[in-house]
Image (tube, rainbow, N blue to C red; front, side, top):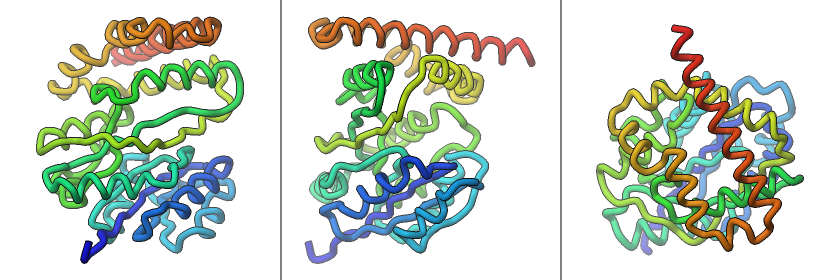
Length: 275
């Protein structure tokens, strides 16, 4: 290429010191050289900002939620393309190179899905890793994280009115403008040490905010048709050898997912009745 595009990588943070250095190291070691790193913190009380400052001079503070942080980061970016990752994610070395490869090969491409694999400590983390392995290559579940800057700006980025489902929402709007492509390189998602009750409580919190996402008719239709609980269970049982390769982990994953759905439904309907 006569002109190698600049890629701006945006990382929103909030008390992210535990995982952040590994995340930013993975950005630093990308095989694609033309990268701008932007970290947008939200009032961290740990050493997040200091760690970020070791890797980039582009460290900002903005809120109130991650969608606003992401959009603010893009507003500061100079890149032709933007990649949005979380502070507990680690890019394998060729992720950005692969993204640039697909978008420069086909100028019609509007977004890129980077598949994820989970890792961490403990039994429930193994269960979450198994669940995520079913989603690789599934457009109804995986969301794009790499976009042409022009596309991102035209669509207004993430909907700051959404606390849950904002990734799916943006991907759906991007897909309406042109194709979204998968790459083979992975993001590794550091789940840390998952605890059962912490996970289901988190699901309860996010589904309390799901009404705004579902209020968009296209989002509700897509979730009902392709991404609801029944569809997830069908997906899991469509590959029984994979699901029960390690029987206890398979049963644990189904138990955790069922509990998430139960607490999620409670959060959704309690929020509804409280109005």
